[in-house]
Image (cartoon, rainbow, N blue to C red; front, side):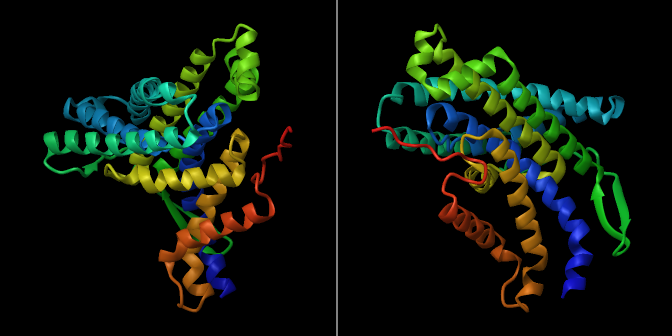
Amino acid sequence: MLTEILQTLPQVLIDGLTLGAVYAVIALGYTMVYGILELINFAHGEIFMTGAFIGTSILIVLTSLGWTSMLPAVISLIIMLLFTSLLTGFLGMGIERVAYRPLRKAPKLIALISAIGISFLLQDIVRFITELFKGNYILTSPSLFTDKISIGSIFGSHAASFKSSFLVVIIVAVILMVGLDFFVNKTKWGMAMRAVAQDRDTASLMSINVNKVISVTFFVGSALGGATGVLFAVQYGTIDPYIGFILGLKAFTAAVLGGIGNIRGAMFGGMLIGLIEMFTAANLSIITGGIMGAEYKDVVAFAILIIVLIFKPEGLFGKAVAEKV
């Protein structure tokens, strides 16, 4: 059994890191909004999905114009990322202005219901537009970075293989995560975000425009979600309007696992969930003697989350907060 697990380990690491990077960047959007508003933005998964459709549509247009044959693949990717990030960033700001800001002083359950409503609305809008132009709601991305690379390992020759898009996803995701960490911890806007997260009323008394800071937070978080949608489409090729639900749920799980509101915790939680999911999918049948298969990978990931939260409710990187009385 151990030999079989070791033989699959290189491929598990590759697939797990790819999926984990996607979860990690999506989780950043959840954790940023929660850190400031203490609101779970359940529409964030659909912003990710919208970004995947926008990026794929841009790539289809570039391909139909013949630009992808003239431009290097990296330039095409940069164009997709820039336009998609801008559009989804403004989409996030619009959602905050219309659906969340009027409910800011309402009970948090009301804002949560509003977020779920926006989620379903985005799903149906994207489905309607896609069916209007394409005839069905499933979209296939033109090929980018499809070169196949095989690697050997100590467990045998060509033990794992991956598309060159794997390297693109990892590199871009790391750049996004490092960039966000720098933005939050080293810039004036980041300082303003941290001040609003700590005490919104005191921050407003110190001449910080709270509404503008919250809008910028939604812009940055949604832009990251949209960019991640592009990476997902490039890596996996086929997308539909419902990919945001399950991926968003797992990214939220990653944010909670790492410590909701903690940016570095969200990064670690995303990577951990991705690796656990791929390891379970590849090896659960071997470990259980065929009793349980790959379809139970989500059960294992959520079970680990429950165990962590039982013993450390604030998450792996979160800090316990003393309640003032």
